[in-house]
Amino acid sequence: MFICRNQQNMFRDIATFRPTILVLVPALAEMALNLSRQFGRNMLGDSLKTIICGAAPVAPYLATEYKKIGIDLFPGYGLTESANLVSGNPEVMSKPSSVGMIYDGMEYKIVDGELWLKGVNMMDGYASPEDNAAAYEDGWFKTGDLVHMDDDGYLYITGRTKEVIVLSTGENVSPAELEVKFYDLDVVQDCLVYCEKEGTGAEQLIIEILPRMSAVKELGIEDIDSYMNDRLAEINRTLPAFERINKVIIRNDDFIRTPAMKIARDRNGNNKK
Image 1: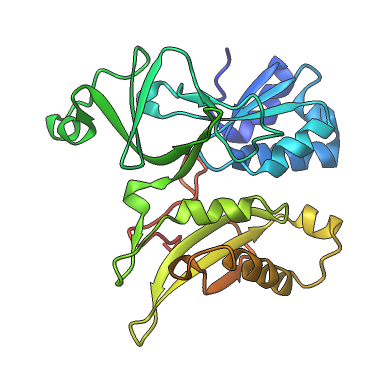
Image 2 (image 1 turned 180 degrees about the horizontal axis):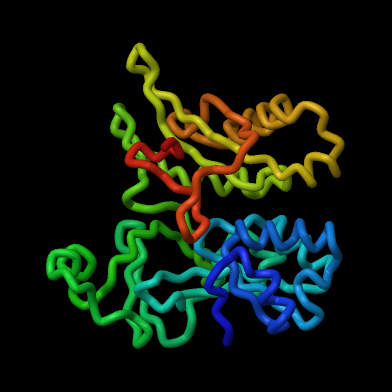
């Protein structure tokens, strides 16, 4: 096993160590795909067969496009507290939005929509007694992730308990559950849903979208704003009134990201400094 200590050296390290498996966050998987298109498959090394992808929503587009160049990309789910081992999806082509099936050796239960875990891979606890008291109940670790499971035992992440938007009407909105509907669109590379109050005090749900320009070009889309507003209208028709998104903003630059390359959310759920 080789750990890349600086993502700026990732492709140099790949050329040197020629991995058969890469473990990447979606933003780096996207970058690697674009560079392999520009400079050839050898950017990823002749030996690469599999990419395990997680830590943020994995767009179905990535699995489809990597398949075209002979690489299998599998979404997975885990936490630092679980040594990153919770679930993996071996059926990404038929269940593209799932993070897969719970690994053997893990115990789990879903309490009020939140995933709780036990297992030999779980950490013993935090250094802070206060953090432990908040995170554990009867030996179960409360992940903070909202999930559901289908009839085949495949897990789906629908949000974070800390990121749920509580509207003035009392309705709860999960940004991640709305965002995943847009990740199913090839033209959406990344997106972020948040709530903003107007000067009148009225609330509106906003989605900011970073378009995947390679897909925009392939589809021959000339007006991305108009195209995404049409897709927004289609998605809104499938949602209850309180979850409908009022406005779409097309970004020209990337989101602010954490060191782990996740989209950074501030205390209001948006991506502002």
